[in-house]
Length: 180
Image (cartoon, rainbow, N blue to C red; front, top):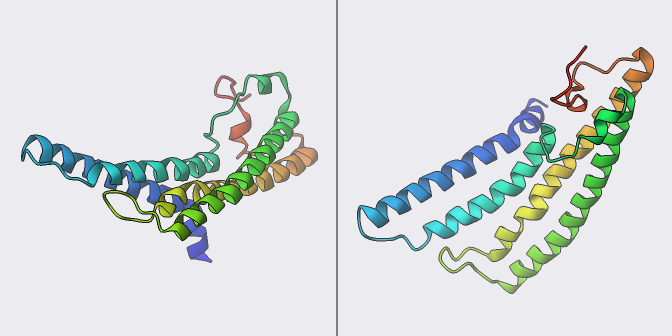
């Protein structure tokens, strides 16, 4: 159970750290090789690009987990506490539907590419692995959205009993608003 909790808290963070590290090291080595050694690596740009693609999709999940994804909160300023939670549930459900769509069709495309046996030019890795970034990242984001929806429903129940938002309800308070 500790392993599952650790994965829940740290999975995206460590994947993002690893991908960023690989990207920075590879680009640094490429710059060094090109300008100091006057010899270029054929695979470095491709590896950095694919790490960046995976970084973006895993980053979506990380942003969802920490309520840092892009959203328009101007409309939320017009509503009271409980209504903000309802809008959060609605936006999370809509985002979850989008995630399911991307996972379903993204996996289909990646599976076709894996079946065709197409490989990348320099690294010779299957192209389907690169295309799996979208369904994997959106699948993780979907899991995080389900977790957020459950927390939102719990916050609604808590609000119904106490008429106050729970202490961990920070996502519902805009940075421009102050807590009273």
